[in-house]
Amino acid sequence: MTNQMKQDEDKLEIINAQADPSFAAQVQRLLELTVYGRWLFVGLLWLTIGSLSLWALRGEIALLQQHFTWVALKYGLVYNRLPAMGLALCVGMTVAVMLWQSRNILIGMPPVERRRLEQQVFRIRQQGKSHPLWNFVCQPKKNSG
Image (cartoon, rainbow, N blue to C red):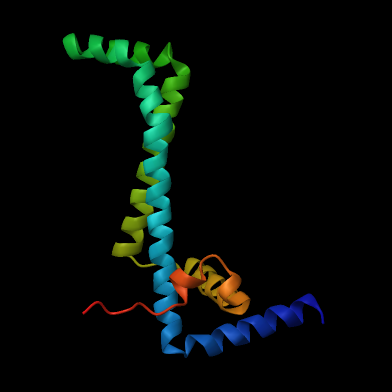
């Protein structure tokens, strides 16, 4: 079987799966897991790299608390490049995740990303219970009550 035939077959199976009402719920659960995973990654960045960077800048921060000037901030970051890069990484990842999630909420998810999630749900379904995300994505949520 050629690669093109396999791709066409996968697309047809995804289209058939989209008619399944549980498929949309599974895609939504995978999206939720993606959001939680991104925020967990940002939190871990702040707990590790962010806290180490702030600790390395504690002297400059104390100076800035007493006499804040933009020049002191600039030189504090210029002469402490590694902690400055660590803070930049943490702030950059936080802003990136915030913008990504805001775009998904306000504008909606782009079709390319929606297809990627659908293909991933399809692969999870194909692999079955041996997939690490099977319990989180494909198992129906139990009602508490």
